[in-house]
Amino acid sequence: MKKFLCAMVFTVATVGFAVADTEISAVITGVKDGKVTYKEKMGKKKFGDEKSADTVAAKSLVVKYGTFKFDKADKKFNVTAGDDVEGGLDAKVVKDATVDAPVGAFIYIDDDDKSDTKGKIKKIIMQKPK
Image 1 (tube, rainbow, N blue to C red):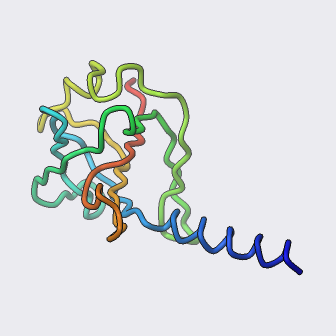
Image 2: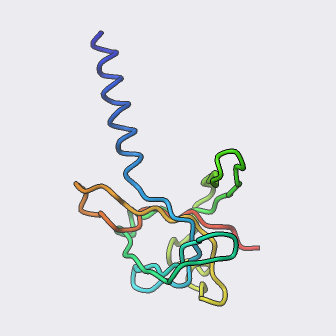
């Protein structure tokens, strides 16, 4: 019984921790001084206003290439993280992002009220350049 209770508490805590992020489908239009500028996707080839957000400390920030597949049944993208982006935010692919040549990505922002990183970008999964 103790094992079951411990497993249940761990599962609830893990799920609660995992959903403490906001996932945003976006295009990155710039990076400067640890701040990422992006436009949120609002539909096929439609984007919202440009926004920017600070990132967590460079050593904690996760920047990876990934694949995005649209699931018609769920009407959402399934995001699969792949290889690390060598250099993180300092990588050429990220540094070269502009409004005219944006980089497609899913951005994960910390939503946890109890965290000192609330509102900061924790993870970026981006398309690999062609």
